[in-house]
Length: 270
Length: 270
DNA sequence: ACATGAGATGTGGTCGGACCACACAAGGGC
DNA sequence: GCCCTTGTGTGGTCCGACCACATCTCATGT
Image 1 (cartoon, rainbow over the protein chains, first blue to last red):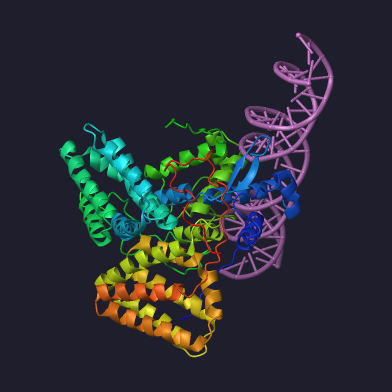
Image 2 (tube, rainbow over the protein chains, first blue to last red):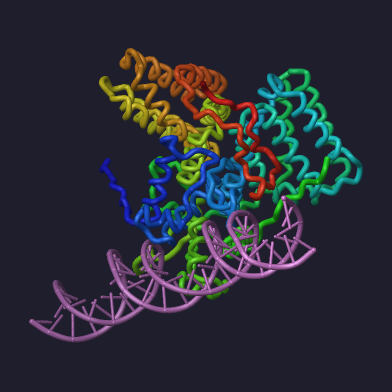
């Protein structure tokens, strides 16, 4: 097998700036809460124009490690933050819409993540966090809840359990993965033949899930949440846009993890 | 409890442009492989300056749904692609460095994802994919492999199994999560007392894992990979930078999933 | 002394225009 | 027909200016 060199594609000053800032983060010299110098000062430090610097900052903002506020005062300027949720959500949402993942992929990922979340929650969740989940469940159980609100509360319930497990990463991943199929789920809820019965059935499982978690019966909770997720996803129709066979992963782009994003096996709907 | 309104912070024309493009994606009007008009044409279409448009495009590029190439010809210009791996990897890497997640969080997430991957791979992996994993394993088993190369091959082995399971999402997540702790793992490998013995022990598990997958014994493979991961992570020292207690999640930022990114429970090492 | 308000200041956000490097396309010279 | 030069279009960069907004400063009035 030949070596297959990849074009390196350097240049792009804003990437160099980005790399430089990232190194500061990895080295621990830039930490959450720190403020960056004003753009007009920072640009000449890097020896680049303000535009190039701004594009680097925009990337960091997209990743959720930076926020910027105009104006004056202690809250103004660019600050390092830790807000991965929105970034991750947007990323998965867009890629799901583009057909990078099939609905089946999402189902399996949800099962894996939430099994872990519920088991961990049963082990070590703080009662206060579970109370919050209970309140979401209560609001979800009210008669006449419209699908849209139910969907919102349902999402928050699952994420809340993940959050209560104390694991910020699975919590974030759960939220993002769930978010990426939110429109599909909403449409499925709205299309339910007997909406009240559907909601009641789902809430019965929710109630039992919460009870199992509270009782510390993690294995049973994990099993039930798997049933819960699989049962519901089964009612969804995979409307993933069928992938064209053209290779959309750009060989000229940096793909250091080699070709893990191949396009086989997911010849979606139709 | 008061309602606690969040500042909406609209404006920012490049976000409006971004939103507009995203809608095209969600509506299926922009698909992988499509080319965008040149920046100089597109900017006036949106009624914004080229800089603002470019910042929107930069965001899309960060997410891995767009690549741009200068020059002229059929490959030039901005194209919609599906390349989530790099984006996800960078995101988790940076956030791990910032302490958004603890090492324990990563451990649990890896266990959850890889249990699922190995079980699914045992169920339905294509032999060719497993052959590739076997080749990685062979290269990993060679005597005298330096830690750095071992780390690289180890990562690719795990990701390859995830890939062979046919699930693009868990594969991507596995790669990204693994990537975020790569430096830590590398340092742990280099610090091993008896490097040859360590490598041999890990490879013994790798070999058995692959055998179990090939034999279709998914449950056993899942159990073993959990042991494998937990055993190795146990040797790592969590050097996550201790989180300062200041609230780094910006309340002025869009956080539609409410407060799932709170900062409790992960007062990291030391 | 204190409150108040108008102006100064500094921040990110935007804009328009210009130029650069590069890769291909087109056409002329051999 | 082939090769080389020139033209053209792309993203990438730079510069300078202005805008909106929040704060700070400080003179003014009570």
